[in-house]
Image (cartoon, rainbow, N blue to C red; front, side):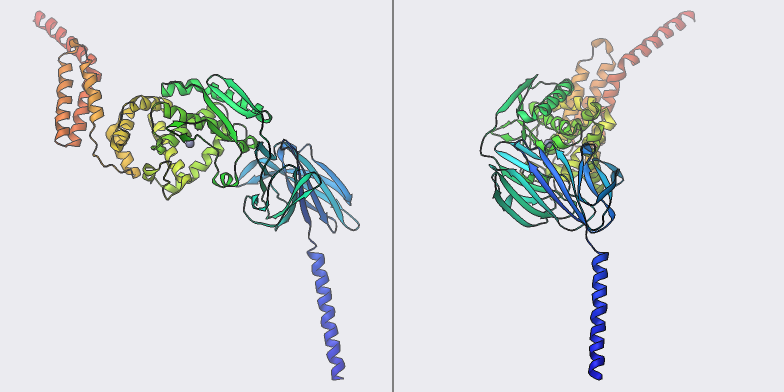
Length: 527
Ligand SMILES: [Zn+2]
């Protein structure tokens, strides 16, 4: 009896567990998604998403916005009841690239669907380099998603070249199957497959020259090259005016980014080799970006060429990058690329807010040394310096005055550099104090040598008929020079201001003096 009761208890327990397990399997019947990418010789990619479920229901995936009207859905088992699209809102903003595709279905047993769309530039190819970057693999289910990518049979790659944006991947297999190199990999949720590969031949590059610019590009990207050349030529007159110089034969090329470039966010660069600047290189990935994004990058790189032309050494990287960011965003906005500019600027603004006016670290930034704060902070701080000064002192006209004054300055002397920033603002002591507040350090005290010599030059150019004010201005600047030698900065600044004031108002002073003299003569005759 005891034994029977024991058996009954075991049987009952087993029964309860079995029912519980059954109910669990019903409640957690997983929907499953898997992705197939089929890449052709030019990088064009057909995407097929396979979906499976064990009952009636609904689900969603992200679809590129541009493909919304071209998606094809095939039901192998079950029926699609309806499909609808919704904006994808992320961090309070509508995503410019993707929409949410929702679908409802019913079935007597299981649902088996495929959802297909295409992507013009899934792989980016400049022979012999190529990289496949999948669309976002984002759907209702979290956890790992199986993907399979078919590259052309001549592609050369291996497991080490397979990755994802997040870096979380598993079950990587690279095999040769029929006429394809097949890459299987599982990636984490809301991620992208990345496969670096090479192709064993070189491409035919097309050269297109418009104005001072020559674009070397594989013909598959020729339309994008024309767009960028158009932007550069439209902006050239503004650059020429601001920098007061011209450029000859600037070469531009696209490059295929490596996985490392994707991680660091490298958008473009200009190599500095053997004492001269090389071509402008633009990350070809951004042909997939919003309208104008690549143009803003090209405008940034163009500024480096102009800065080099007027003698700003790359070792003063905060000036190079600050000017390049400011000009590319300002001119990009004037060309109507508001969305692209907002995306570029948004990243800089969020970083500079964290800096809380501590910007002095960029002073040590060179091509060979990045301050411990990191590159993002260096770019943001440099941009903020130029944005602040240009907003306050006349935007592009401030830069124009500044670049004129750059001629002949000692680039190893920080004090002299900042003095020039002050001269262009007509506020040397104020600008020097501002850089101090930002945390810039100066080995030399503010000498105001450049300012004194400029005011002296102005005073000497005054015509003789402005006497005695010409002499007053001369005496004031002479006292300023004397005080500077005795290291009395406040007195020096005061006397420079006095001399400048007399210089600026002397014609009016002379007029008032003449009126007074004439009035005095008339009055004295009447008496
Ligand atoms: Zn740059």
